[in-house]
Length: 239
Image (spheres, rainbow, N blue to C red):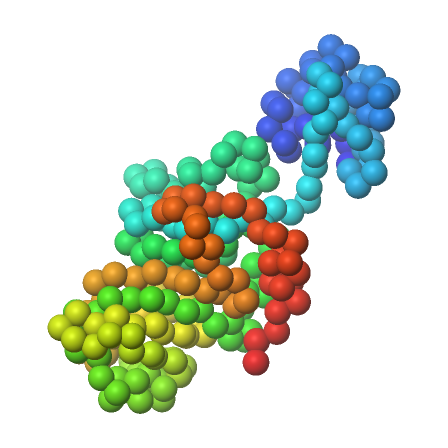
């Protein structure tokens, strides 16, 4: 990779600004001052420094966020705050995007990455990647609902869902449940409960494939995935 492209990708300025930075002698590769913008860098083996500080370049970034309500799962929006707006600049420069979406009022696990191939694997309808949600339901959730979800329910547009695994944590006027589904239709969890005459009043995604929400993350916080988590995602094969 060319040194000017690397520095520009990392947010150190436009190509023109990066050229000026190089001309100033502030950039070194393996202790040698580099002024030629066309100089190639081995991003795996060369050590690049800017004013004495080592610069790391990675092709991919993988972030786990505990998405807060009121923020939309998009890279940009003219009206609402997006999940990208919550990122630090040194993470945003890698241009990650949300893998799938959570409704504006839904909380919980959201994966952000710039690895398009992994995103495709996790989102492809053919892969049947399971996602587990915790929800509070306005209404008494019954064993009849459990059986209905196990078979699949008909949504308001006539779509018949794939089976969902519904577990009742607490049954009452306000029921608490966990629901695992392998699809990602628009407002699917809410519409599945509408199909059985009930309403979701709180929704939080807890898992996506092998990835589990880090409960230490406060709403709006995020962290990089561990090497083990990345490996689990890349090698994950749904049953």
